[in-house]
Amino acid sequence: MGKVTAIVKAAAKFGPVVYPLVKKGAAMLRENPEAARQVQKVIDGLTKARAARSRPEGLRRSVNVLRGQAQRALAGASTPEEVTRAEGWLAQADKLDGAIELMALHDRKGQTTDAAAIEARVEELFAQIFTALVEQDGDQRRLPPA
Image 1: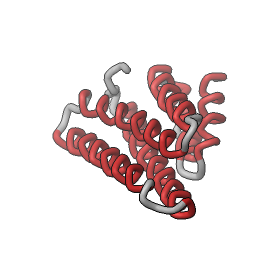
Image 2 (image 1 turned 90 degrees about the vertical axis):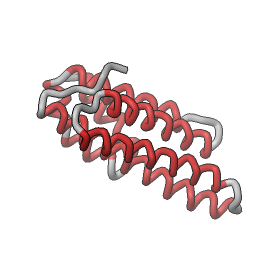
Image 3 (image 1 turned 30 degrees about the vertical axis):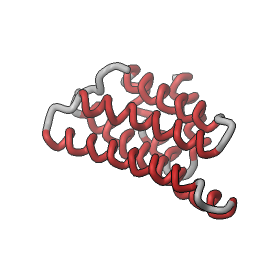
């Protein structure tokens, strides 16, 4: 039980999208240690990414963590719908990378605004991937191991 509590506490640092979602999925995580390990890896990766020296670098690292999860979902996809969904996540990650690159063109205030919007989008993408993991658990399907 302690591991799931630690996951929920770590998720609390990520804002209004991630925390409620992880808290809601806590029961599933308690019942499925493999899913808990996968979620812990993602949250640990996002935590390390946010510790980067610069905000753009932290955003890049966060996107890379989610891209890795999307690639794992694509590798484990067993239906055309799952393939399409995972490819969509990868496309969103590419768009986020482009937005991060464009941040440099703005002044400091514009960069702050852009970074906040990108962080919100990263949280939404995490929510989509986490929700899919929970749904897959209900169907007894799993993402391939990391």
